[in-house]
Length: 332
Figure 1 (cartoon, rainbow, N blue to C red):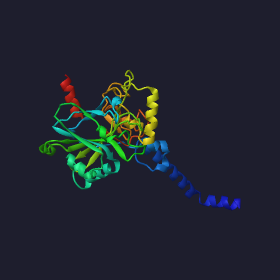
Figure 2 (figure 1 turned 30 degrees about the horizontal axis):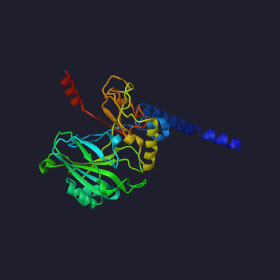
Figure 3 (figure 1 turned 90 degrees about the vertical axis):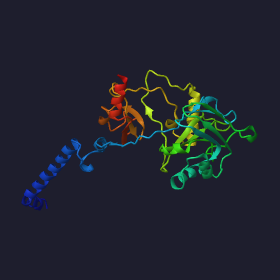
Figure 4 (figure 1 turned 180 degrees about the vertical axis):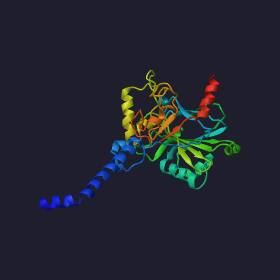
């Protein structure tokens, strides 16, 4: 049997050698092309090479002006019984409408109605979309560029001390900002902003914070406003003065509610220098982790975020080169 095999191999040896040489040529060519970043079959590369050579797509961003601004003043003192103080910063005269105890289901149905049915550009439009599924409503007129503090509170006769255990069917407070003048709605792409605010109560003592903010556009789209995570300055202290015990309590409460702590963590003092070269100005946002930590010169060398090591799927610049040159000229 062995003799027959040797005779057969001898007779067909030229074809055998040709096949071996051709296979080696294909493998070598694939490795060389993969080294220089060309697309080659994954079978010729290991998984690490495949991940490293993945191209990072740069998103084309469109700049829009948001006429609304809303933040919580002194969140540590806010509660269902004592109320909450909101600070507004609007570019035009606006209306702040607060809906206490808004139904979670009706709220998200209202967002879908903005997309498919009618535009939520007025408080009445949102009220119609909610089918009045809230406990109490209050409204305030906001003057442009006033940055005034608005104190909101449930009436005492409602006798509401909490909204039940988690998961809840109602949000404690939903704040709607809309443009007061109808003519201003033709100027801006963003016609309203909705903020979902958690307020601690007797049952659920997670500290007061804005859970979600949605920007509603005149074309029918709505976008979830996300926080960017800037590279933290090593010389700065966190702005939050809460104790470690309070932080651990907040973390456990967030996990029960199904919220990621990173999405609602209070911002720190941030550095504007690139975390890699420590020289260039931070200008690039990496997605999906939303870390803003690289300058124009360093972003091209990274397929992974230098902060969290997550693979970068997309990225976009905060400012174009023209805007940066204008800023430099102004500084001079």
